[in-house]
Image 1: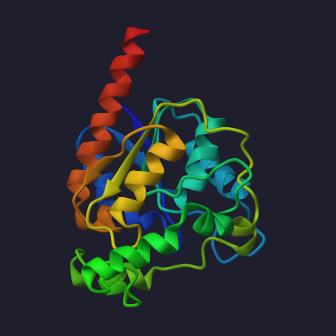
Image 2 (image 1 turned 30 degrees about the vertical axis):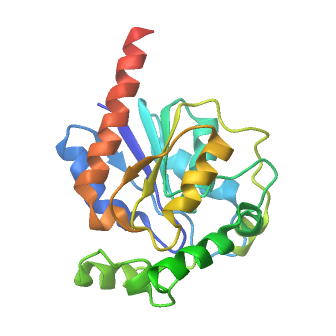
Length: 235
């Protein structure tokens, strides 16, 4: 059994993982999805990591998963706890000394969105969240998700540099969403090898795939945990 530490993205709460968490528990694992501190402009990335570490307590056999902006926090948690595998789900991969605010320009995100929008008729980057974020999420569930949005991350967290000198020395996997209209798939197919030196895995679905395809996400995560467990047993 692994313990999955599910870290939500910007504007979200732990609730965004509730369907995936249920799927992981049905597969015999433990799962926790803490709410990161929201609505507090003074909170930093370190504060977010503190909240996750406190929620984990003495649990072991950890698989840390960061969605979208949650990658900034997930990577810090993986540097502080004994983690079997770190997973980024459509995650913003930071570089040492780079703030989240700087990430967008440094990665060429805007150009990637504009290029994809030209190809798909303006679906990518669309101002309507039902088009750009929740297009494949059941409407009622999407409306509930929007009703739960919070003021997260804080200005302090977005402005401060990612504090690590290098990527954590932890096995890392990346899952991109093949129908993502926020982070175009081609953008991550380029960025992941550049920044992590690995080839991303892919799942069908949009940016909020934990709500639109939770069973598929749970399957992928459980597969990563099984590989990590086998590696641990060989040591």
